[in-house]
Length: 285
Image (cartoon, rainbow, N blue to C red; front, side, top):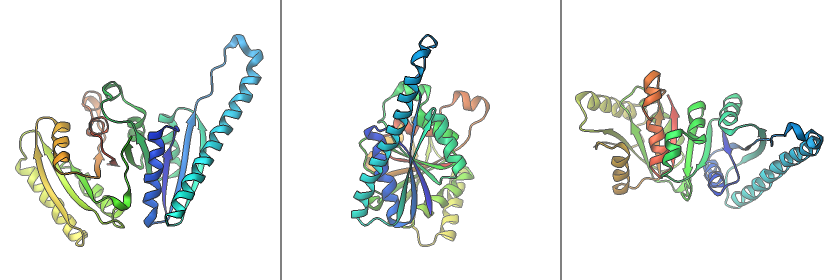
């Protein structure tokens, strides 16, 4: 059974993630948890005499959040039950604290396999520079993360094309293996793409051939296309490629950065998250 965590803040873009998560359950048994994080209001020391009233309101608010999750759960459960979805359970959880801290901690402690999150659309340059809750969760979680942009309907059973981003790193094999396993119940075409600013060198071509042979030996029934694209701007090159070759989902590996690289180089994950308006499946190295 796959365990899926869906963080919600009750916005339309976060609710959009529930449909995707339930769609993933149509071919396999799954356990879904809807999670909402909230912060208690601060109490002014000069207003201690009303603290009990505030406390009551806080307790009521937490209960309201849970009831809201229960209502949402019942609505989506009924909808997908009628569509013939495989057996699945939906749990609800409300936790006090900041989502960027609690979501990865809760996921890691409980051993979730996948986090499905709704995100806002691209173009938020300030958030791209300063970071975001979504990016913080991706960096701190050990589970695979699937982000679904606002306005994008990712229907797993109707997903036909997946783009897998190669980085010519040892992690490529493991991530591609996991992608092939996850997508096995669905009929999808996978294209593995390597981007280089100018041109691929002999080492890049050698590693791509190694990846091809690995997949042919271990997944003989799956056909994978391999391509190399070039362009000085990573995001612009990928946007151009996706425009010419429409894809339903982009999959990639998030590699940990160290030292100065972590401080001064924006990660590939971050560039995709804020620069390209497409669902993104992120594996961890």
